[in-house]
Image (cartoon, rainbow, N blue to C red; front, side, top):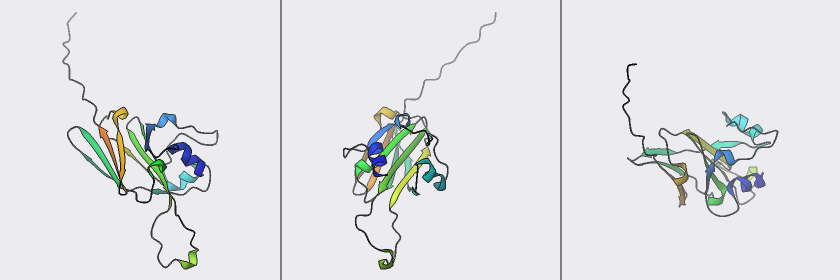
Length: 158
Protein backbone atom coordinates (compact mmCIF):
# COMPACT_ATOMS: atom_id res chain seq x y z
CA UNK A 1 0.00 0.00 0.00
CA UNK A 2 2.92 2.37 0.66
CA UNK A 3 3.97 2.07 -2.98
CA UNK A 4 0.48 3.12 -4.05
CA UNK A 5 0.79 6.39 -2.15
CA UNK A 6 4.35 6.97 -3.29
CA UNK A 7 3.07 6.55 -6.83
CA UNK A 8 0.21 9.00 -6.22
CA UNK A 9 2.24 11.57 -4.33
CA UNK A 10 5.58 11.31 -6.12
CA UNK A 11 8.94 10.86 -4.45
CA UNK A 12 9.76 14.50 -3.72
CA UNK A 13 8.57 16.69 -0.83
CA UNK A 14 6.30 18.84 -2.99
CA UNK A 15 2.54 18.57 -2.92
CA UNK A 16 1.41 17.19 -6.25
CA UNK A 17 -1.42 18.88 -8.09
CA UNK A 18 -2.45 17.16 -11.27
CA UNK A 19 -5.47 16.32 -13.36
CA UNK A 20 -7.30 13.22 -12.18
CA UNK A 21 -6.90 11.82 -15.70
CA UNK A 22 -3.24 11.09 -14.87
CA UNK A 23 -4.16 8.38 -12.35
CA UNK A 24 -3.43 4.86 -13.59
CA UNK A 25 -5.83 2.08 -12.71
CA UNK A 26 -5.35 -1.65 -13.03
CA UNK A 27 -8.05 -3.93 -14.44
CA UNK A 28 -9.58 -4.58 -11.01
CA UNK A 29 -9.73 -0.88 -10.08
CA UNK A 30 -12.12 1.73 -11.37
CA UNK A 31 -11.69 5.39 -12.15
CA UNK A 32 -15.02 6.14 -10.50
CA UNK A 33 -14.81 8.04 -7.22
CA UNK A 34 -16.04 5.78 -4.38
CA UNK A 35 -19.22 7.19 -2.90
CA UNK A 36 -18.91 5.63 0.54
CA UNK A 37 -16.07 4.85 2.90
CA UNK A 38 -16.89 1.15 2.73
CA UNK A 39 -16.30 1.14 -1.04
CA UNK A 40 -12.87 2.78 -0.70
CA UNK A 41 -11.23 -0.50 0.35
CA UNK A 42 -12.41 -2.24 -2.80
CA UNK A 43 -11.57 0.75 -5.00
CA UNK A 44 -8.00 0.87 -3.72
CA UNK A 45 -7.63 -2.90 -3.88
CA UNK A 46 -7.49 -4.22 -0.34
CA UNK A 47 -7.82 -3.53 3.34
CA UNK A 48 -7.87 0.23 2.92
CA UNK A 49 -10.12 2.17 5.29
CA UNK A 50 -10.33 5.85 4.46
CA UNK A 51 -11.18 8.75 6.77
CA UNK A 52 -12.86 11.93 5.59
CA UNK A 53 -10.83 15.12 5.68
CA UNK A 54 -12.45 18.19 7.30
CA UNK A 55 -12.18 21.36 5.24
CA UNK A 56 -13.10 25.05 5.17
CA UNK A 57 -13.83 26.63 1.78
CA UNK A 58 -14.19 30.36 1.19
CA UNK A 59 -13.90 32.73 -1.73
CA UNK A 60 -12.52 36.14 -2.55
CA UNK A 61 -13.38 38.06 -5.71
CA UNK A 62 -10.60 36.30 -7.65
CA UNK A 63 -10.04 32.90 -5.99
CA UNK A 64 -11.39 29.98 -3.98
CA UNK A 65 -9.44 28.92 -0.90
CA UNK A 66 -9.61 25.48 0.71
CA UNK A 67 -8.06 24.97 4.16
CA UNK A 68 -7.68 21.82 6.18
CA UNK A 69 -5.82 20.76 9.29
CA UNK A 70 -3.78 17.69 8.49
CA UNK A 71 -1.06 17.60 11.14
CA UNK A 72 1.42 14.78 10.95
CA UNK A 73 1.35 14.50 7.15
CA UNK A 74 4.35 15.25 4.95
CA UNK A 75 3.77 17.30 1.78
CA UNK A 76 4.88 14.32 -0.32
CA UNK A 77 2.09 12.21 1.21
CA UNK A 78 -0.65 14.56 -0.07
CA UNK A 79 -2.14 14.33 -3.53
CA UNK A 80 -4.45 17.01 -4.91
CA UNK A 81 -6.27 16.49 -8.20
CA UNK A 82 -8.81 18.43 -10.21
CA UNK A 83 -11.13 16.62 -12.59
CA UNK A 84 -13.62 18.88 -14.40
CA UNK A 85 -15.31 20.69 -11.51
CA UNK A 86 -14.24 18.33 -8.69
CA UNK A 87 -11.33 18.91 -6.32
CA UNK A 88 -9.97 15.85 -4.51
CA UNK A 89 -7.46 15.93 -1.67
CA UNK A 90 -6.09 12.53 -0.67
CA UNK A 91 -3.29 11.47 1.65
CA UNK A 92 -2.13 9.23 4.43
CA UNK A 93 -1.12 9.88 8.05
CA UNK A 94 1.24 7.22 9.41
CA UNK A 95 1.72 6.46 13.09
CA UNK A 96 5.43 6.52 13.92
CA UNK A 97 5.65 4.05 16.79
CA UNK A 98 4.13 0.65 17.45
CA UNK A 99 1.90 0.68 20.53
CA UNK A 100 -0.15 -2.34 21.52
CA UNK A 101 -3.90 -1.79 21.85
CA UNK A 102 -3.96 -2.72 25.55
CA UNK A 103 -1.59 0.18 26.35
CA UNK A 104 -3.94 2.84 24.98
CA UNK A 105 -5.99 4.75 27.55
CA UNK A 106 -7.66 7.01 24.95
CA UNK A 107 -7.42 6.58 21.19
CA UNK A 108 -9.13 9.38 19.21
CA UNK A 109 -6.59 10.34 16.55
CA UNK A 110 -7.17 8.99 13.06
CA UNK A 111 -4.24 7.22 11.41
CA UNK A 112 -4.27 5.97 7.86
CA UNK A 113 -5.61 7.17 4.56
CA UNK A 114 -7.96 10.12 4.19
CA UNK A 115 -9.60 12.02 1.37
CA UNK A 116 -12.13 14.67 0.54
CA UNK A 117 -13.77 15.58 -2.75
CA UNK A 118 -15.84 18.69 -3.37
CA UNK A 119 -17.62 20.12 -6.36
CA UNK A 120 -16.16 23.52 -7.15
CA UNK A 121 -18.86 26.20 -7.33
CA UNK A 122 -17.05 28.17 -10.06
CA UNK A 123 -14.66 27.39 -12.88
CA UNK A 124 -10.99 27.61 -11.84
CA UNK A 125 -7.69 27.85 -13.69
CA UNK A 126 -6.39 24.37 -12.79
CA UNK A 127 -2.89 25.00 -14.12
CA UNK A 128 -2.47 27.92 -11.68
CA UNK A 129 -3.61 26.14 -8.50
CA UNK A 130 -1.17 26.38 -5.60
CA UNK A 131 -0.96 24.36 -2.39
CA UNK A 132 1.14 24.79 0.73
CA UNK A 133 1.43 23.00 4.06
CA UNK A 134 2.30 25.28 6.99
CA UNK A 135 2.31 24.05 10.62
CA UNK A 136 -0.15 21.27 9.80
CA UNK A 137 -2.58 23.49 7.88
CA UNK A 138 -3.02 22.75 4.18
CA UNK A 139 -4.03 25.75 2.07
CA UNK A 140 -5.10 25.24 -1.55
CA UNK A 141 -5.56 28.40 -3.61
CA UNK A 142 -7.65 28.02 -6.77
CA UNK A 143 -7.68 31.10 -9.02
CA UNK A 144 -11.11 31.69 -10.53
CA UNK A 145 -11.28 31.53 -14.30
CA UNK A 146 -12.05 34.77 -16.03
CA UNK A 147 -15.76 34.78 -16.67
CA UNK A 148 -16.70 34.80 -20.30
CA UNK A 149 -18.07 38.02 -21.69
CA UNK A 150 -21.76 38.03 -22.44
CA UNK A 151 -22.64 38.62 -26.08
CA UNK A 152 -25.95 39.72 -27.53
CA UNK A 153 -26.86 38.10 -30.79
CA UNK A 154 -29.45 39.67 -33.03
CA UNK A 155 -31.79 37.34 -34.80
CA UNK A 156 -32.24 38.22 -38.46
CA UNK A 157 -35.48 37.69 -40.28
CA UNK A 158 -35.15 35.85 -43.59
